[in-house]
Image 1 (cartoon, rainbow over the protein chains, first blue to last red):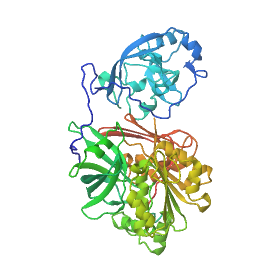
Image 2: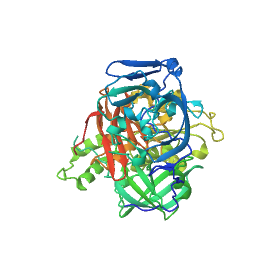
Image 3: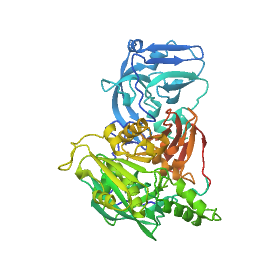
Image 4: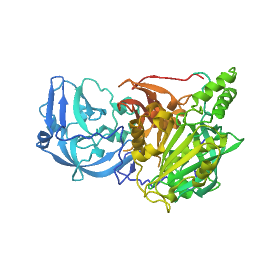
Length: 196
Length: 289
Length: 85
């Protein structure tokens, strides 16, 4: 049973050729949350890359001493919204992985608050991903993943883990939080890889 | 658990708006006629689904302000909906929906945030058995009916405290109304925190319940503006005001709290501090837009 | 973001269960707390619904709905008490 309700328009949903299939343009920045927003003090914040050989760590000050870059990119959320030309500042994963050796091909991003998401390593390197600490020239606020979030804009935005804390190398492409619960292991918006 | 009172089985139904009237300055009272509605217990909610011409749908939950059994082919159900600014469904229901419009509703929903008068609870258990559970062999004798009434939590000995924040009063008003309609002997109190007299839901109905034979006391807290001659100035509900108004923990009341997340969590933590058992406190947070 | 509580799950879960889940008690794998689903914290977003234990924040359940398909995850629940009428 389903019928149209008189007078219900459902709001405006613009179309744009730059959008991947099934996406709609938004101007604002919707917040999707799977839990409470973690309050992470930068004094205690730490970023880690964990391999079979050991752990690489950066404190907030050490992280901010790394070379960072401006990123202008479109972002695509699996919930059908896209935002074009967003601007970020962050550290390239090429920089972070410079001295990291691992036999493993896959990465699990782990966040403060317990969130996880999986990404193949070769989709994080060669200028494809960052750990971002600024959005629109301002420090990233906690609602949007501050102090720091992963930014992997060529995949659906759930892969850009908010409150990222560590990247753990793993031998297989194990599923992260949403990927265990119905979402696609890979998540390419141009292929509409939304669900299993 | 044998003989537990049950609530009617939920399903999707076509509803027709019978009337829409102003309830407060930001809310409307909608009377719906729902085909095949199986009746509902006081405190239950339903989900409203709206569908746009392009197929887009939006679904939100609303507490039901009325209760009672099915009354035939199309049963009347009352909602009271507050407009959430920037919301998607509530502005439609408050400002656009008018008599004759059709909506889809899913319900009745929820068996946790529910109060049933003792007699009804026993009857509901019997009706549920007769109405098609495979267990129709159950022959509700007096003992089972008593168990059912007990499990419904309506023994006269344990008072019931309702605590409402704003439009969170809707399911609690349904409970108070069911209590009054049944002439139930359970002592009832409602503590209702509201912005101003113009924001009161069910003002006339609640006053009638105060005067009715079923024991019901109403305590109002005005947070922004009071009626003329009100003994205290406007202000947020405090722990002291709550303690003064509600049944003491020693009377082991069953407590139902409904309001915004902030209101519910504040009130629930005060109740725990005042010695109420967490298991006796049932809460419902609203967040529908 | 404001969370809701398990009462809000009554509608979505009524499509998948033959009984009212919100009144059923579940045991949390994280801390062992046993409580009605209605008491859990619910974080609803267009991506999906995440149900968390009100005692320890551990994820009890997830619900992802996409058109004709839905995924119901119960990874954080060791057992659900089902009432047999």
